[in-house]
Length: 343
Image (cartoon, rainbow, N blue to C red; front, side, top):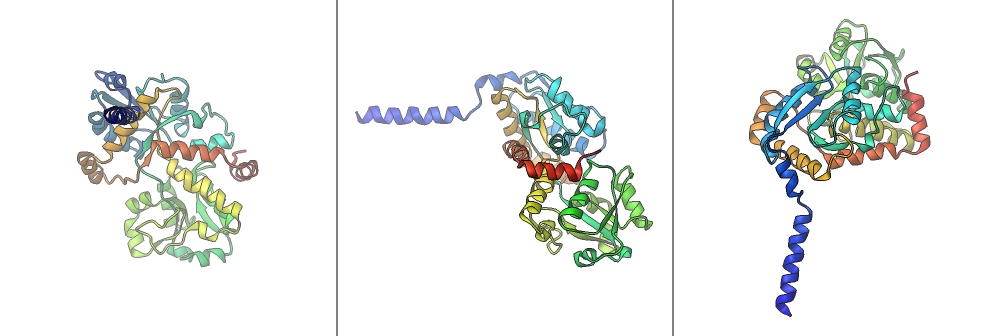
């Protein structure tokens, strides 16, 4: 009887382990195969640089050591690539899409051209979270949040277009925090906003700290450019004394809008995704390989040399955050649409 019990326990334990391991077929599947990594932006940009670095190291962590090629499929702010991965690519684990996660919010806002349901993608992971901040020139006279709250006339912030975070984030801050803001649209990129700020056309703008640090470090160090507000859940290590936007919310509704439309979207901005219906064993293989690659010393060395920030989000976390985005109450969805929908 005792031996029978022991055998039962051993068999039960083995079954539990086996149930959490992808099927053996998924390991054999990738041998001799080629994976397409479809990037929604042009070569040389941040999305492309991350993808090419991953493509060089990810294969050795996938059983079967497949080849990975990067294909740039540009257009409509990466919407073309997102629609392709969702509608055209076969759900066989051989196509990984990399497009901007702000499109998920665009789906919620019923923006034109969205041909996917973000909730049905399978997510591999993301190498980094966005770190949105608002940076203003010393010449503008706005050197802290108190100055900004009391500013007259409204502070001019440069932006690309509605649907882009350079517009969406200030628009949310204007409504939720009551910050006096005048959004100046039409800039082609954050470098153009930076030049406009240097020339006095605008006071500054809101985009990611990683980008600002890389392109404006001298201006930051000299005090000519000041980070006045950060839109992250916790302080960025480089900016321990810069206040958080969520600290100035005036209502629970406002707090929730910031959490969903800024914090959660920032975590979702750089996803690697698979078509709906991709077999779960292959999803798990790629998720594990992705996480292992981000710990690979050779990859980390390349990321360091290329100045790539790493703050990963797992595939499971991405899926949960996307679900949370669409779980918003009808009233909050209506509020976001009223604030951010493109007319």
